[in-house]
Amino acid sequence: MNLVLSEIFRYADFMKILVAGGAGFIGSNFIHYLIENYLEDEVVNFDKLTYAGNLENLKDLAGNARYSFVKGDIADSEAVEKVLKQGIDVVVNFAAETHVDRSIHIGSRDFVLTNTLGVQTLLDAERQLGTIKRHVQISTDEVYGSLELEDARQFHENWPFQPNVPYAAAKAGGDLLCRAFFKTFGLDVVVTHCSNNYGPYQYPEKLIPFFIDRAMNDQPLPLYGDGKNVRDWLYVRDHCEAIDLVLRQGKAGEVYNIGGHFERPNLEIARLILKALGKPESLITFVTDRPGHDRRYAIDASKIAKELGWKPRYHFSEAVKETIQWYRDNQDWVNRIKARAKGINAHLV
Ligand SMILES: NC(=O)c1ccc[n+]([C@@H]2O[C@H](COP(=O)([O-])OP(=O)(O)OC[C@H]3O[C@@H](n4cnc5c(N)ncnc54)[C@H](O)[C@@H]3O)[C@@H](O)[C@H]2O)c1
Image (cartoon, rainbow, N blue to C red; front, side, top):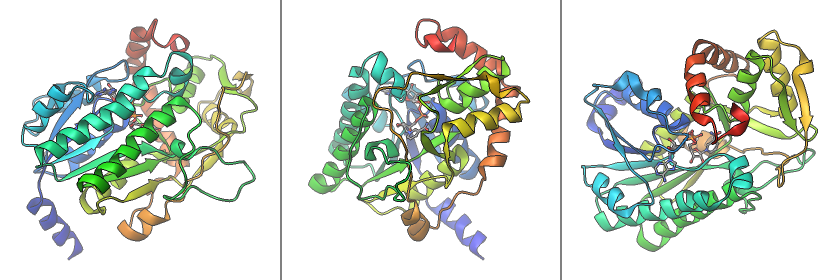
């Protein structure tokens, strides 16, 4: 009975969804999720194609009448207005500069332009158009700052914003604008804060794919500081399900935390990857800690569990094996990215 009702809901409620930043890691997984699960929905992928954007992630959708791509910048008001006028019903915004190290070592300007000004540009265009039914803003637990290892608390949705790195500060700016557009203009906006994602199509500058690639090539795995910094790990497929629920059933103006219930020190993640690949722990090397390096993130995801019935389906031990296998099977994908990364991401090549 439930199945039938949910099918009716799906068909009765079909939408044209703008996925901003859909050529990146989570965005491309989310587009696949939508196309597979909603037979009527249409998806427009709006992406600037920065170094992190990769249309290869979506090449299986070429020729699919329900998927289209528009190249554009979320901070460009004309381009945004034009794409929204393609009959878009809802917007899910993944577009961002996402690499913390780059926001420290290369510069934070692009981070503010996309993560803060880009969000303002999107929201303003949506408000002026007046036909967009919902904006879902994908944000991060990093806006909440850092917890000590021995602190038993977890970040809840009302936790104060205390970002410690430019990436997180720029994301916090976008989140606060979402709140303001809801309060001031009544725009239907929902914000999500997730923990660290892993899975297929993640750009290999990020910890898990970076370590998998290094280990496969018998290269050292550099760990910042003492390696004891703790992150919560969320499988991207679980994250997509959560975002989809928030999009369709979340309450306007609300914030939802999304976590994987799997907090582990980075050192343990490195060991686990080495073990899975049959490589020695001697590949682990400790390097000077990153400035502003948050010690621990911990997400309280009880609100989304209680209100929308979401919880992660995948356990890390299985999902990370699948992820490692994906990177083994797709070494050409990684190598093409590494070839393009010369001069952009020096540590990748
Ligand atoms: N990956 C994680 O673990 C994680 C954790 C917490 C939050 N998030 C958030 O999730 C979202 C997606 O992260 P991801 O890991 O998929 O990132 P990603 O770096 O893999 O992809 C970002 C995408 O945004 C596009 N983009 C960048 N600037 C743009 C602009 N101005 N206009 C249009 N497109 C632009 C890029 O081309 C790329 O396709 C981000 O908002 C990020 O802050 C990610």
